[in-house]
Amino acid sequence: FNEMMANSLTTANYVRLSEMLKEEHNVMMLNPLSNDLAAMRQSMLFSGLEAVSYNINRRSFDLKLFEFGKTYHKLESGFQENKHLSLFVSGNRLQESWAKPQKTSDFFLFKGYVNTILSRLGIEKTQNQPMTSDVFAEGIAIVSGNETLVEFGSVKKSILKEFDIKQEVLYADFNWNLVLKLISNKIRFADIPKYPEVRRDLALLVDEDVTFDSIYKVARQSEKSLLKDINLFDVYSGNNLPEGKKSYAVSFTIQDTSKTLTDDQIDKIMRKLTQNLESELGASLR
Image (cartoon, rainbow, N blue to C red; front, side, top):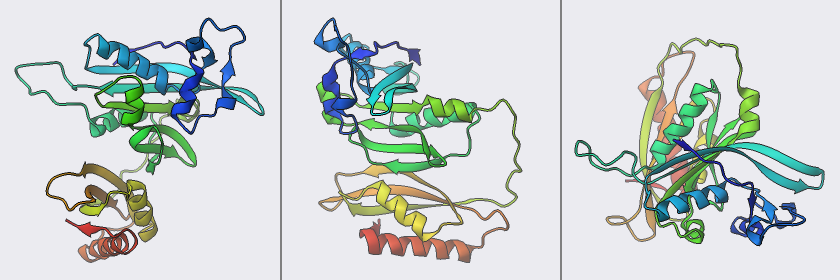
């Protein structure tokens, strides 16, 4: 990764690209040099996309960028500054080589980068949750308790179009204030679970308007104690599927810390999951 340092001053018009940003929260300059430098940024995304666009326009297509910076907000309670770490990945994952075929950086490689950062910092007790955002085409939030540590995903094409970017861009926004709170100098140990976890995969055929968020919620309601993790590892839409349908490949990790699960217990959980997904979301197995 290469570090970038964007200007905290930006155009006030960027708030119009996301409903999560409010114009009244802009911190405006009293005597700006230009309209493009009239406000303090409320998001790390748009200044980062400026850097991505700048590099692509100069034929540097394969990018891995990070930035430590702040966002600025004018709230009713006063001015607020938040610390962030942002990541941007776009283009091929490796330099061109005769030894290996080119492969584009994708969501799952990017997810590995995000998880590695948290792991290296010793932040382990987290959960993945699907999220709905007007800046991500597909996004996931990693949470600790009730607070969001990081949001990441693939930036929507409608936003990339504003910066004349035609290739996919993956973006992560770490809440660095929270990360710093969770980092501890103490080394903690936990017993390795004596009993194995079990993974089961389902290839689900769903309507195009069904989100992973819906699948996640139904699964959590179906099994609250033994279902440890739910992960979306593939999305497909296109040929060989009925019109108006898409395919989600979802993995379910099941574990009982007090005993080994039997095949009958696992099958019972998966039958309940499948039935609830079918009855509530109209999902069917491929």
